[in-house]
Length: 103
Ligand code: FES
Image 1 (tube, rainbow, N blue to C red):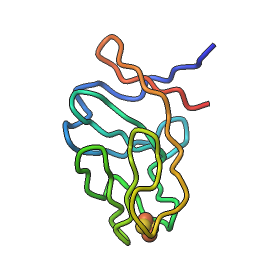
Image 2: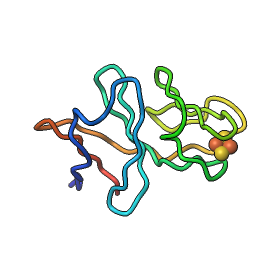
Image 3: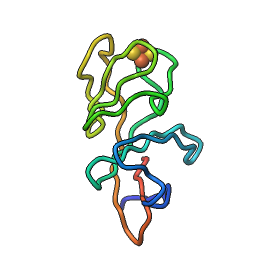
Image 4: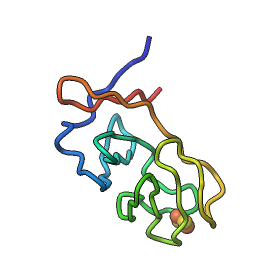
């Protein structure tokens, strides 16, 4: 069975924006897009930059350091110089809370 972790209140995830949170000892980015929430690792796979300091446009997060981009839905790179996918995590919204499956 999936182990769901209570990550945040749904209302704390801004719409069309990104926040970084420490959850279970990991640095996680939560993205609010169109009423949905997506979750990935917060550290870019290209260098040591936090994606929560970047710029979210639609489903794409732009890294603040070299402007590489990822699709927040699956962590796939969409723009150079990033080539390695970000780890992404299943999300569910229940009881007004955002739950993540980190395993
Ligand atoms: Fe993110 Fe270089 S550190 S694109």
